[in-house]
Image (tube, rainbow, N blue to C red; front, top):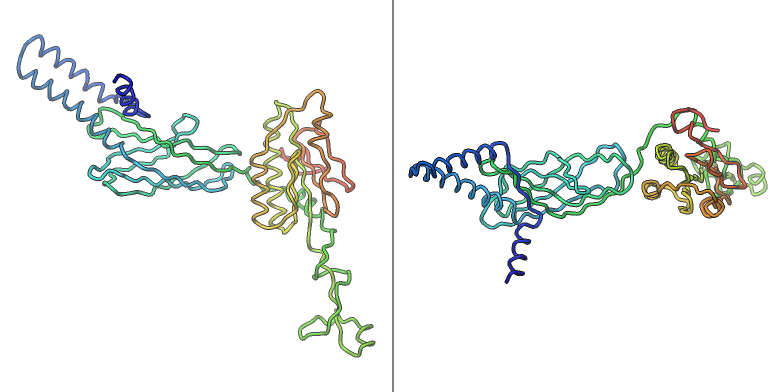
Length: 373
């Protein structure tokens, strides 16, 4: 019997808390004063007033509990967020009670045990009704953003108490590094890298791709006169395109503990670099330590690279770095891979060996200087 009673009490008080407001504290003092006066004087009017004030306290607790009961929440977060960039999150609240409405609800996100006020207020939620709330969401750091639940607060009906209820509503999103503009001279150097790589497909270039018969609208400068004279048919030549660009980007994850800020700046610079090259139709490969993506192009591939950067972690170098160097500094796949760009947050980080020249981007570049070496 005692165990069952304890279970009922725990279920009733699960994720519930109550706090007095300033008005509620004053009301309790008045109630105490009226009670003392009723005992000392024995006046029936004082006892009547005391009973009325005690009933107000009781009704306030019961009504507030009914406002917080049987609420249902559904949360939607964007799949990808960017650091310090405004996004929109939505929260759907439904009152599953069949008879009683809920009043004066204030909603807050709960993250790592801390309440985050989003400014969400519901004045009235009728029984069986639902309400869609949207609010701005700004992530301060990259990585995984986890929201544990929703805290619901009400002071209804008399404002004497703040009664809180916690609903576990998990939400998770990936926060990508902030995309920053690159200096013009640095961007020109990086865009020049990898442009000499020739892709075997038709386009504007110098190497022969195919010969075909002349069609209306073809450029007369493309006529292949030798074949035309031999076959007595007007023939034009098609050339291979030289516009397809490829680049391998390597980010070293090794940096001492006191260079955590520099590492975050290096990650943000790499994300900006990936974004700028992707929008210029580069085929990109990203390597972070032992993690390596495939070569790809397009929006889906760009999002995959940004996810890699969002979830990468800094590693402190050890005194004996031979094992770390062997594992984390594997050379990128440079066979027919175009340019190699190495971003290192720490001058002591090793540079992967590769058969092609590497464009090295160090701390002076992504901490404000406008050059790469």
